[in-house]
Length: 283
Image (cartoon, rainbow, N blue to C red; front, top):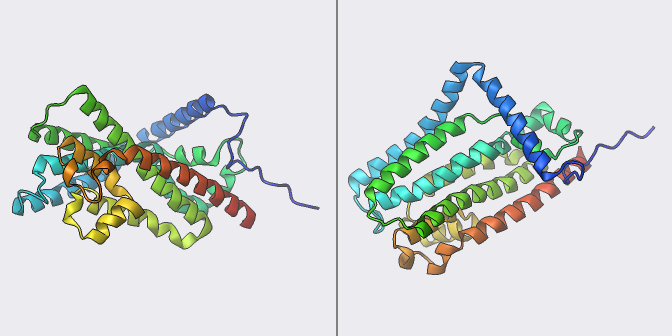
């Protein structure tokens, strides 16, 4: 007797409208948050973990500026703007989409297979698997960093510049989401590739907070065209601080981050769908 086929919930379910999906995601996240709040000690530790990691990044930058008041022609406040944009985007990514990094755990525990049998998109179920409380700590440090940065910058913030800054933060969020979707798709095909999640987070946290001119041309090209983390902070900050004419390759790149973010998201979703289809055929 042939075994029943598993529903292909990796494709959008026409019975669940987009508004319904958002409502469902909100309900699940709210329930997860209440569950996290049930143990206040764990809740506090999760926030402390997010704060500790981001504070470590900023302390390292402080040590660097203690020895070098200017980095590749960028002052303290200007470099803090790069890191603030990246950290705000990272914190928002962790808050809404950070559960992508749990896919190896979901695969090992068999929960990913359960997601495929439910009448809801698999990706939505991954995003709402648990409430990522540590993201609150990331956002607290990122907002504090931005506040310090704005106090150091001698910039007249017009409405256009504020809109550009907000768009840059949204772009950083989408870029990180797109890159992690590519990795998640690889994990569904090759289980040993899960370390790429940690590699991307480490590379972004190490190199994404500084002016691109600090690095050799090979890394400048890699962070612009291969793993484009420079668009998640450096390029938009260059326009906001008047450094657009000094960026590598072309000044036009300071305006390219929305296109890069959209392309990465489109490509990441396509890779995700293929990864889930591959997993369904081979498991």
